[in-house]
Image (tube, rainbow, N blue to C red; front, side):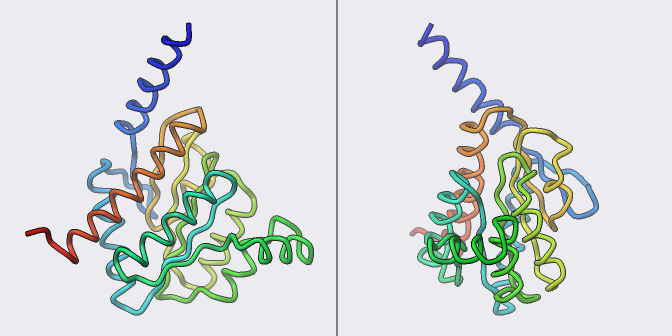
Length: 195
C-alpha cells in the first residue's frame, strides 16, 4: 500500500513537470522550455532597466519565495526581496487585514521596471490577487505560478503565467520550485559560463 502511494506520488510529480503550461498576458500558450526562456528574458530585461524582483507567496509558497529571492540576488546580482518578514506580515495584517498583506508593500516598493513573482498553488489567494492588481496599477511586470484548476484567477493576470496541472499541493509546490530554479540556473550560466 505504501509502496504504491510512493510510486503514485512520483508518477503525479512527473505528470506535473511534463504538463507545465506557459501563457502570456493575451492567453497565448507555449511549452515549458519556451515559458522558462521567456521568464529569463523578462527578468533579464527588467534588471537591465534597473528593476528588482519581488517574491510573494503563502505557506510553502512563502518558503519558495524566500529561498528564490535570496538565490536570485546571490547567484545573479539582481536585487531581489521577499515580502514575508514577520514584523511586516503581522503589522500589515493587524492594521489593514490579511488580504492586504502583500498589496501594501507592493504599492510602496514596486515601480514600472520591477517584476512581481506571485506564487499560489490554488491561484485563488485573495492577498496574492490583490498584490498583483497593485503591481498592475504601478506598471510593474507580473510573473505568476499557479496550479489546481486551469481556470484559476491568478493564471490570467501575469505578463507570463506558468501553470502546473496537478491537484495536490506537493507536486505543485515542487514543480513551482523547479521552474524558478531552472530559470535561476539558466541565468547564472548565462552570466558565468562554465569553462
